[in-house]
Length: 253
Image (cartoon, rainbow, N blue to C red; front, side):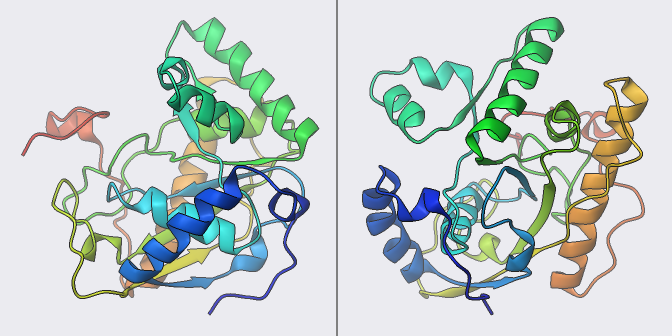
C-alpha cells in the first residue's frame, strides 16, 4: 500500500511533467494496479539515485508512474544521441533527463562528475538501471550490474543516496521481448523500495571499488525482488559473457 507523502516542490511546481502525467498515469492505471511498499525510503526533497531491476520494456513506465505517485519527478538516464533528435531532444532537455555518453573513459568520467554535481546543486533525482539492459537471466532475476550507478554515487562523495527498487508483475503486461497484453486490465504490479545502499566502504574509482559498490547495489535489489517473489535470489548473478550473450541491446532468441 502506498504511503501518503508530501509532494516535493519539483512536483507541485508547474512543469512539462504535468500534462504528461495527465495522460500517462490514467493510461497506466488501466493496465496496472500498482502497489508500492517502502515509499518512505525515497527522499521527498534532495538528490537521489533510484536503481530498479529491469526485465520488461514496459517497466520504465511503471517506475516513472510510481516515482510520480511518491511525489518526485521521474528523470532517467538517456543515451546522449537521443538528445540530438529533433523534438525528442527538446523534450528530454525540458524534463531534465540526464545524458549518458558512450565515449572515451576520460570523457565519461568528467561527464559523470558533472552530472553528480548537477544533481546535488539542483536537488534532483535520477532513475538509473544498473543492469544497463533487460536482464538475460532466464528466470528474470537481476543480472550482473554495470558501474554507472556506482560511479555517479561515488562521484558525489556520498551526497546522493542510492535507493534500490524491485518491481514484479510487469511481465504479465509486456513479457520480455513480447507483445503488450491489454486484457485483462489492472494486472497486479508490486514495487518495493529499500533503504539507501551502504556504500561507505567504497571510495575512488578503482576497478575494485566500482565493482564492490555495484555488487552491493545489485545485492540489495535482488533481496527486494526475492521478497516480492517469495523466493531466494540466486547466489550468483547471471553473467551474459559466460553464456555467449551480448550485454546491451536486444537479446536474440
